[in-house]
Amino acid sequence: MGALKPKDLIDLGDEELVQRLKQSREELFNLRFQHAAGQLENTSRLRQVRHDIAKIMTVQSSRERSREF
Image: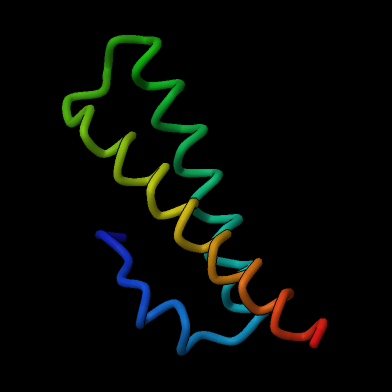
């Protein structure tokens, strides 16, 4: 999927963000499983996916806060 940019995430709709978050969490689960089994070659992908999840969640919380006002 590659690194996500905050501007790209802001342009996405709420449903698309939820879908991206779900996909990223599934990917992280699979990467952790591969890492534990010793099959993961690119361990930096774990960090990248965790950061992507954080970016998505930040955009979601920002939208929630803006709706409160």
